[in-house]
Image 1 (cartoon, rainbow, N blue to C red):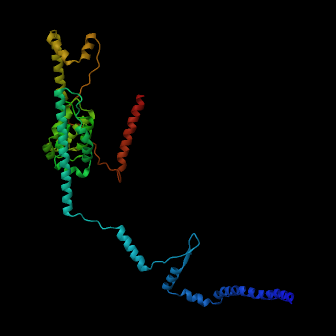
Image 2: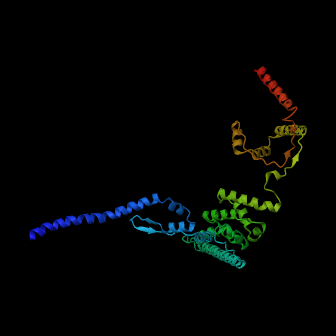
Image 3: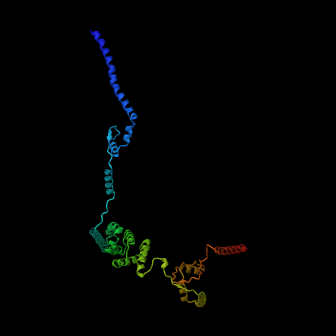
Amino acid sequence: MENNEAVENPVQKTEEQPLDVVAESEPVEATAETAEEPAAEPAAAANDADDSEDEQDNRVKNTAIRDSAGNDVSFNQPTATERQLLEERLDRIVKKPKVKRSRRDEDDLEQYQDERILRLKDEMNIAAQMDIDTMNKRIETGDNSLIAIQKVKLLPKVESTLSKANLADTILDNNLLQSVRIWLEPLPDGSLPSFEIQKSLFSAINSLPIKTEHLKESGIGRIMIFYTKSKHVEPQLARLADKLIAEWTRPIIGASDNYRDKRITQLSFDYDKLRKKSTLDSAINGRKKKKGNSAGAQVRESTTQSLYEQAAARRGRAAAPAQTTTDYKFAPVSNVIPISTNARTTGVGSTLNNNEMYKKLNASLNKTKNKR
């Protein structure tokens, strides 16, 4: 009996297997039915197309995407009002309103700048006085180890302040140029300040809009004249000093910096009068040469001649003429007849002038050919 039951159990299991297969195959039939539903119901697709925009937005909001790990990540699309609020907020962040500076803030800033320039002015005066005291002590004691370096130490700060364009008016109003003049003055032993001090201060002075009242208050014009005449000044600084003096004196004398506004005095030139004068001078010189055997005449000739010309005269040789610089005060009256510019270039009669010019050119060319 046991064997029979053992034989029957496999049979029962084999009979139950089709049930499991059928149960597993049911979802397949369901999926097939769901796949056939859209094709069988076209009206449902039409109804979906007629949905309102709000329902479509809700569908988009509820959609899910997968990240790189394969997990579902849902996102919510902002509505029109949320989008508008976000744009307004971004506009407020990007376009911040300009804060207008009040009059009180401007006064505080001007006061701060004035105090800053006045402090620097005091520091410059103290440094200059310390260098003067050092040089006086060096002269008295003869100790060459004493060096005036206080101005050199303060130079970077002075240079950075003078180079700022926004402080130009404050510098001039507080008469900082007076301290600059003190720095440029020669030391007690007659030596000039260091080249770095001269170069930096000259460059700063050239960039400042200095007017006549500033020159009177600071007295910097006198030190500039000294630098133009001193032989110990570098040529480039001397040229810059000449330029500054020309710019400062031009408004004082009422001169213009435009060459077209320059007034040139003209005088008429009489050639006959000059010829008579030259013949008379040559006759007088000839008489002097005949009588010029005295020592006084030889001395006068030697003073008018250079050493090179005197040496050439002693050897009986010709000397190259020396270069002379001439400064003309008057200009001759021009005798050039201006050519009329009323000739027509277009319209009736415009080719007349061209024909005349063509004839003149041909005539000149024929003359040159005949000469050859």
